[in-house]
Image 1 (cartoon, rainbow, N blue to C red):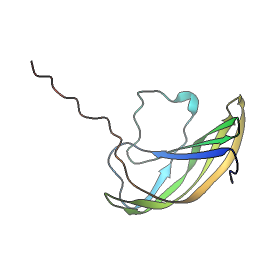
Image 2 (spheres, one colour; image 1 turned 120 degrees about the horizontal axis):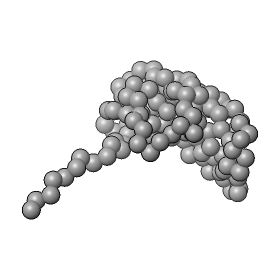
Image 3 (cartoon, rainbow, N blue to C red; image 1 turned 180 degrees about the vertical axis):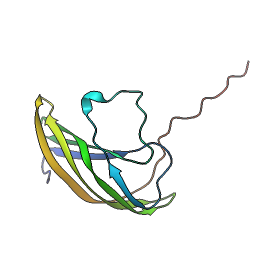
Image 4 (cartoon, rainbow, N blue to C red; image 1 turned 90 degrees about the horizontal axis):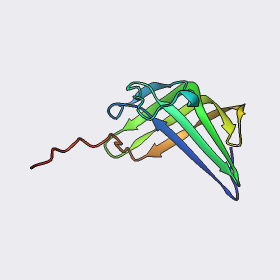
Length: 123
C-alpha cells in the first residue's frame, strides 16, 4: 500500500513476555470484537495491527495469521521480516470486511512496554 498526500500508516506487533530471540514466530488471528483492556498477550506468538489513514478515511486491520521472522534481537535493535493476512474495515463501515496481505521488513528499537512494578507506599 502506498500512502501519498494526506495519509499515514501505523503497523504494530505485540506479544507478552520478554523480548524474543531470533527465529520464526506465528502471527495469530485476532478478532477486534473480542479484544479486552485486560487481556493477556501470548508469550510465544505475535498479534498484528495495521492502522491506515487516507484523508478523512480510517482503516483498521487485525491479523488473521502468518509469520514474523526475527533476524536480529539485541537490547538495542530488533530486525526481521513479516508476512500475514489481515481482515479489517473502514471505520465508517465496520460491517464490511476488507481482506489484505501485509508483508515487509523492519528494523526498530526494542522497547519494553510492560507495566511498571507497583511501589510500596511508606507511612
